[in-house]
Figure 1: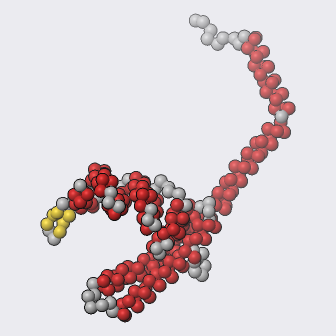
Figure 2: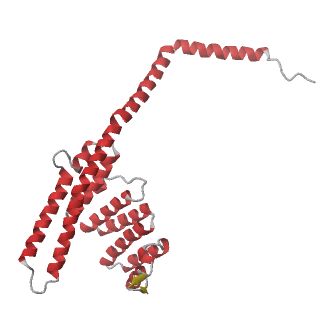
Amino acid sequence: MANKNKAVKPSARVEQNDTLATTTAFFTKYKKLIIGILAALVVVVGGWLAFKYLYLAPQEDKAQSYLSQGIQYVLQGDQLMQQVAQGEEQMANDTTGADSTVKKQVADMKKQATDMYNKALKGEAKFPGYIKVANNYSMTDASNLAKGQVGIIYHKMGNYKEAIKWLEDFTPQSDKTISPAIVAALGHAYAGNNQVDKAVETLKKAAELANEDVASAQYLVDAGKLLESQNNKKGALEIYTQVKKDYPKSTYCQPQNMNGTFTEPIIDGLIELVK
C-alpha cells in the first residue's frame, strides 16, 4: 500500500519560511502601530459599551418614566373634552335657546382641558413635560415617542401647524400599533390644516404600516371620506373597494346587527354612495 503521508517538498518549505519571515519582519517593523490600532479598537468598543449601558440606558429609563407620568394629564384632558362634546350636543339640541349655565360649564371645561394638555406639554412640578423629554433625551426611543405625543396633543388643541411640525419629526418604527397611529394623526393634522392631498396619502401610509384589519380599514375609510369632501368620488371608490378586498374582517366589512336584524356591511353603503 502506498504511503499516504507525502513528504513536503524542499521548495514548499522555503516558501513557508519566507512567508513566516516576511510576516515576522512586518510585525516587528510596525509593532507599535499595530498595538496602537488594537488598543484604539478596545477603547472605542469599551467606550461605546460604557456609553450604551452606563449613560444611554439610564437616560432611556428616565425618559420612559416621564412618558408614563404625562399620560395622566392627557387622559384628564380627554375626559374633559368628552364632557365638552356632550355639553355642546346638549346646546345644539336645545330648541328653546342655549342655557347660559351650560354654556359657562362648557367654556370652563374647555379651559380645564387646555390646562391639562399644557401641563402634559410643558410639565408641572418634577414632571418636565413631553416637549423637554423630546428635546433633552434625543438619543432615546422615548424622545421619538414624545415627539408623537406632543403632536397629538397639539392636534387635540386645534393647533394643526404645531401638530404637523412635531408629527413630521416622528420616526415610525416597526411596530403595528403606535407608529401607524401617530402617522394617522399626522394625516388628520394635514386635513385640519386644509392639506387634503397630503392627508390622504399619509392615512394610506398609516394603513400600510398597520397592515391590520381594524386599524387599516379605519385609516383608509378616513382617507376616503376626505376624498368625498373634495367631490373625488372616483378616488373614494378605489379606497372603499380596497377596504372590502384587503380587510374583510374589519367592522366595516361585517353585516351590522340592528336590534336583531342584520343589515349590509357599512363599506357596501359607502361604495354605493360614490358609484
